[in-house]
Amino acid sequence: MASYLHTCYRIGEIDRSVAFYEKLGFAEVARMPIGDEAVNVFMALPGEDPRLELTYNHGVDSYDLGTGYNHIAILVDDLDATLEQLAAEGIDPEKPPYRPGGRTEGHRIAFVRDPDGYRIEIVGE
Image (cartoon, rainbow, N blue to C red; front, side, top):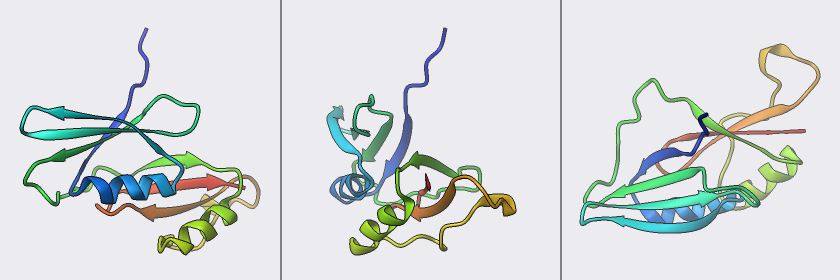
């Protein structure tokens, strides 16, 4: 039997990234130094295990994201209210909320980017 544990992002600055993910509802659960080379920061949404690992490698302040990665997704109760809260913090979506594929029913989505350029899909009513 297998279980999904986490997704890891390499980040350029710990406090900046932690502050961003806290605005999305995550909380820092733990920091773990990896010798003299790196620090792992584990983030979790309320009531969940930490599933987002932010890795800061000492001396590296940016990464090439490549073309294979797309996004992680989080579900919120009220997409419009969430986007309003994020806008007040200076975080704007790539474009206004929409239903993918021309759907007329169901959840709407919007994408934001974290300080290192990683995309986060926010899904909600």
